[in-house]
Image (cartoon, rainbow, N blue to C red; front, side, top):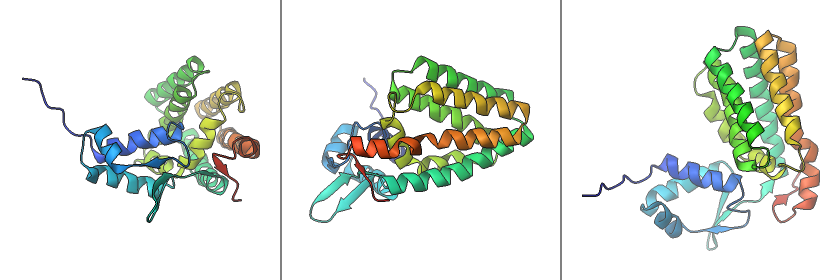
Length: 224
């Protein structure tokens, strides 16, 4: 007898749809259907609806009465807010990691993520997955609870612009070099260098935001 697979959880459905939005498989302005998503995931509409509510909270989905549910456009105002929050948190994380040290296991995770980015230079989706793994190595390594979940929630709009910038607008070599500088500063226990490297790294997306908005007006709203 063939085993019956368990239905996907709300968290799994949310993560899958969120990734589709981040990497623009679901593009801004696309109308989404609860019924179609329920068929896709082999579940009822209830967990799909709950997953969409979470995406509404993240600013990735909007529900318009009498019209439907749509993927939101990338908001430059939201990107800048996300960058502000992310910088504050990641600078604090890098500072703590440099002050107290990072375990060998977390250093290895960060190194492996850089290697994965090297291998995925021309594959933006895998490059950004490795990018997240790099930053998570530090967030998980400072042992202050699941701080990565807070970061991930805040950076959703930031992530879409980041993906759109790769690999041609923001050189991947620049990003990899900045990651190496961050890891090196933490290993040396150099708090000042770690903070500087984190701030420089997180400024890259803002450097190209206006260019991307001009190039992709169908995807980005300049509401600053």
